[in-house]
Length: 421
Image (tube, rainbow, N blue to C red):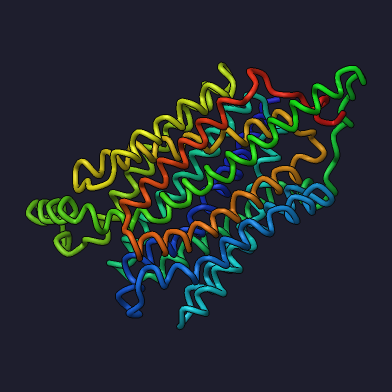
């Protein structure tokens, strides 16, 4: 029993590391574009974003086939492919000499990145109990990947160059993939065992329940799309937002560190901006633990409404703010943006049948990451024509839409048996 428990803990740790690497490797370019390539290659920030867009389309587009293949073959096998594939693609991207080559590399990164969410979350929601807390813990690792992307990329820009930020985590991912394959070999090498078919419900419930399922499904996918727009816009643009809004804090802190005897600190502005971004992301990720606990106790409706309201308040407050006030407001809306992440996954995990769960997560992430990709040209257009203040107002409006939609959720979700009827 103890051996099985330890094996499960290691398996869950591998899945968490996978979520960490998935978000880290897809967001390295966000900081590279904001703090390095715009200067090194003489291209505007908005112009560079278009080369990242195909990668995020791949992130979404390939989610459904990844989930389908996992259900038909092996979920553990697909996770092994993810680790090795995304690591190799990241290393290859580091050798790019032109923006087009970077775009091709990011597209391949996106293909392998698409594997994790439909497959990893299907394992998490089916294999273990306490779904809300498990998703929250797994989500925190993903958030730390988002945060660490800004931190290590900023560091490598100052110490070794931006290419190293693609190579080092790429090598690490491949090593983890080999270890995961060894640990899960019996499950990686065999076909996925389908769980028993769900029990159907009586015909007298069908009409009402189908209407309820349709309403909940529509809300899930609407909030998925809008939440993804908010999340991508904030996580991708935050390094650039801080580059514009927190120069005063970054300069003061590097000068203070330099005066305190920290070597080379005075000129490490990119490192400091990356560190501030990391701190905001890391602190905001704690919201997922709170949300995960509340989901298991209160259900998704109340929790989602609170999270959406937090975002409305802080996005609306952000325009015009700089330095300390901008940092405080950014922390506020990132608490909301990160806190909302596990809620839709929780609802799908409760509603979807086990045998089709990876495919349903695949459809969810096709929607989510397609919106991720569309967010990049939107950021480019809004920033280029109106500036970030307009983007913050758009995000406040988006959070308000989420709040209204979630208010229409039922107090209790349909069960897998209902969904299958």
